[in-house]
Image (cartoon, rainbow, N blue to C red; front, side, top):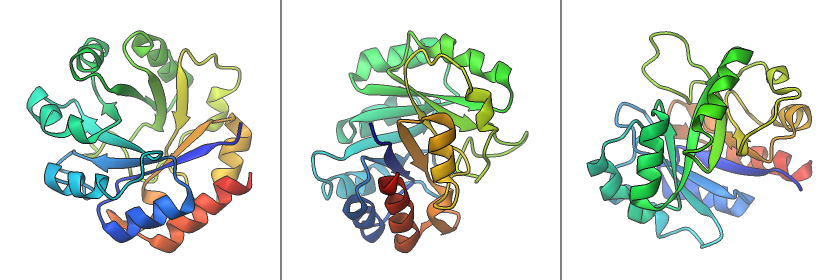
Length: 210
């Protein structure tokens, strides 16, 4: 099966439309307030209304409380959770009834042990690069990890790959890892939080060509 792509951190109608036109399978809406990609619940609903049914709407959260989830889950097909404990992931999945993605931050092979810890709680694992110590954001910083760490690794769930991807390296990433789903944010931006329609198009064209 060819890889599909999620364009994450969209906040404007033109960039959303570019992602849809380019064939993105998933769109990420970021609800982490400190992020330059943050969208308020009302803004996210307006964007979601522009999306056709075959494109999946993924909400991006960092250890969220139930109040935020209740205000946003109705807009979403899936909930992506950063820095969230396995028992909390399971509780969110049970309460809100959405497909739930657990982010596993990777820098060393030992970090992959966390995949097994979330396997019973989530529906999908998103491997992302571990951000530097002291970083305010858990992702979207253009950092990639060593893809060879995934060599021979038995994934306990459906999975996706993120971290430092762009049109120039996504082909190598897919060939190297066999990732079925690719997630990009900063790699299609001109500045943090500023998506570029041409970069979105180029990235999606590259994925589709593989």
